[in-house]
Each structure stands twice: as structure tokens, then as C-alpha cells.
Image (cartoon, rainbow, N blue to C red; front, top):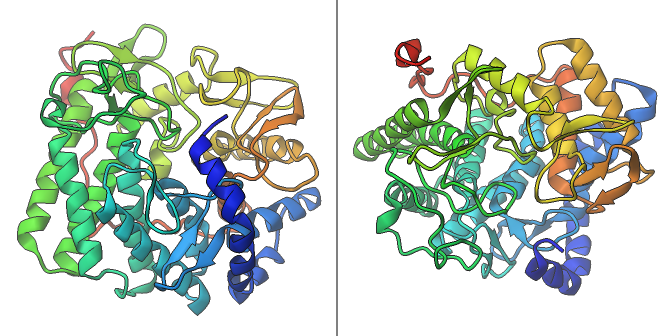
Length: 442
């Protein structure tokens, strides 16, 4: 019932993907990592299957020497999902096979952006599968490329096409800061495809959420936070790799304008929680207080490494992990965040994994891991969402992104692997929200 066009596509081509993917499944470093699990014995198969899920089933190498990555049980390549599915493999990026695979993803995503920067998903032949403009779909490829470069020093994928693609993304972001100037329309959006009315904030407008659902209000706060991180990293690439100071300055100015927009429009006072980050705003005085399971999310702010105000994030976290968040659900087997994208009451393993990755209390991490183990129905894969009272009721039998994020949670919290996101972002630290902006607020 979701992403129908892509589902038809997978029926035609999935068998060929599985045949090609067997090449990737032989990467030694990943096979070794899958066998070195440290944690609860009943979760070893889940970890192994989830770590290898993408490389085993979803990756194929193409004649143009790029890497095509499907989302699991859907045969198109989403820029967001493919980037996220590669992320745990950055732990093993010193392996030549891993480097070849990730480098191929970076190059293909750049080609995709050059085809249509508004599109979020593409077919194997670079045709657009969906043209839902989602700001995070432009941020994810940049973040993957920067992290890969920092981990390996390899600049082979950072070629002229990649630079052009990322700069085209910047041009689109600059345009969509004032959506009234945009020609973008989508049949799923109100007002003749334009979307709901917005005022200028300095942030970037987005038509759709990371869930692929239409946005209620045009400025998605976690999306804009992730864009800030991506633009910081892109400025580093422009300066250090491409030696383009003029473009680096333009990127940095765009980034700073978005930060100001988040500070000025994205923070809401609530009597119960104090100041919290809104999920969406319109710049006209309206806000949407909720969180969605898909990443970027409010819960994932530290995972994204956006330097949010610590106190506001903690207030926001208490809100999103409570029944006051309209998409927080509880059942006999788990409690967590769901999404309007899936049946009411269903919890997403994505959100549980993010909760574990951002938790400060080891007991909370252990609880999340136990809830994820309990959601296993015997296939040892993470699903898109599940009924917390009956995990045999779930959506999507193979959701590569969730599997990858679960593997990262285990690698980071149980097996001692440091985050593949380096803390130093090219000597250009982001400023956190200033406490002074709250002085005049209640």
C-alpha cells in the first residue's frame, strides 16, 4: 500500500538484484564482523542477518561501476535509505571491498541528483521512481560522502560530477528557502500541489517528510537540522578537497541562515515540558508538536550530530517518548514511536534503535535491545513497524534501513565500535542555540 510504483518495479527486477548481490556478500570484513557478535546469545542471529542484509540482498554492482542499493523488499533506490544502509559499513571501510561498494553508492547518488534534485528515489537506469521533494534526501548523500572521505581519505568518488551534484542541491535549497519562487508541484500536496502556506524563515521548505508522507507544514525542523550538518560537511569538502573558497562561503552562509531559522521559529514553549523543538512549523505562527519514527527525527538530533541546546533536546526527548506525542505507542512487548505512515499503534524498530543510540542510561539501552529482540518473528530481520502486542503483525518483511540501524546499535553499544561520524567537522564548529534567544519568552 506504500510506494506502489516501486513495488511494481521490484517484481520485475528483484531476482536479478539477488544474483548480482552475491558478489557483495563475499566481502571478508563484513562476513567476519557478522560472526563476532558480543551480546545476548538469543540475538546473535538477528545481528548477523541484519548486518549482512543490505550487502547480501540489496546491493548490486552496475556496468557503469556504481553501486545500486534497493531498500529491501522494494526494488528502487531511495537516496535516504541507500545512504543509511551503508552507514554501519563505514566501521569496516578499510576493507577494499567495502570501499568499492560505498564509493559506488556515492557516485551513483551524485548521478541521481544531477538527473533530478527534487526526486527521492530512482530506478536502476536512473529514471525517477518518485519525485517527492524531501530535504533529507539531499543531505544524506553529502553526509555519506563526507564520512567515507574522513574514514578512508579516499577522494576517488569526490569527482567533478559529485561536486556539481552537491552544488545543484545547494542551489535547490537556496531556492526553496522562499517557496513562493519555486515551480515545484506534487499532486499529493494541497493548494494545487504547492503545499500549505508558509512564511519566510530562513529554513528550507520541504514537501514531504522522511517517511515519504506529505508535510503538514513546510519547514521540517529535524530535516533542517540535518541539512545544517550536511552543509557544514560540504563546506569542508569545498575547502579541503575542491579548493573552492567561494562556494564554501556560499554553503556556510546558507547553513547559518538555516540555523537562525531553527532558533527563531523551531522552538516552542509548552507548559508541561518547557521549551521543545517542534516537528514542523510554517513560519506563520503554526506548529506541529509530534515526532515520527523516520530519521531525521527529533529523537535523533544527537545521532545526527546537530548541536542543539542540550536542555531543549532533553525536554523534547521527554515529550516524544511520552503519550503526549501522538505517535508514541505502548503494548505488552514494547513502547516506542510509530508513524502516520503505518497502522495506528504500530512501533518502528528504526525509532527504537535511535532511542538506544541516543540514550544515556545503560538500562534504557538494554531495554531497547530486549524489545527489538522480542520483535523478531523468526526471520531475524527488522521490519518497518510492528504491533507491540503481537509482533507477528508487521509491515514490510524486509526493510534494509531498519536492519542497518539495528546493526549499528549493536556495533556501537554492545561491541565497542566508536561512531563512524567523526566529531571534528572540518574546523567549522556549529553553534548551539543561544540561551539569549529565550530571554523574552515565557
